[in-house]
Length: 136
Image (cartoon, rainbow, N blue to C red; front, side):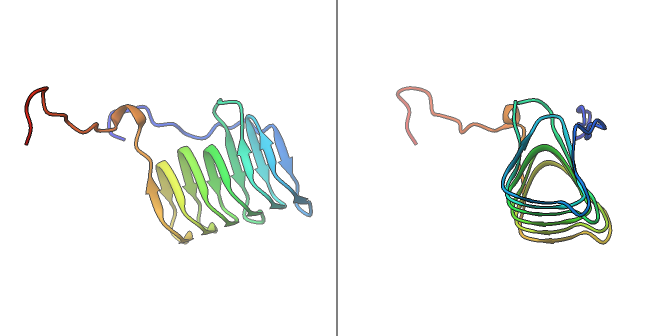
């Protein structure tokens, strides 16, 4: 967090689920996706590249979300996995666990679930092993 490069959501949006649209099934995408409608299914970014999901105030997702960047201002019923960044804006309502590397929560956002920090893989502390021939 301090002194490191903070990753923010990308501004490019490649796909849109418009207001009044209901998607029954999973969505996989690359790049950016904005949801103003309803999705009943998982929303998962593929391709190993940075991805951004923007869920507007009118948007609703019932299912798992797995992206690198999530900006949520609508309703989510399911777990949220943001491998880089999760932002919960003032109208966000999340029922489910949120795992994140960087988290921003605005006043008014509601979470019914656990907040789980996912450390950077390179910063994981490995248990120390005693040198060969020594024991505790």
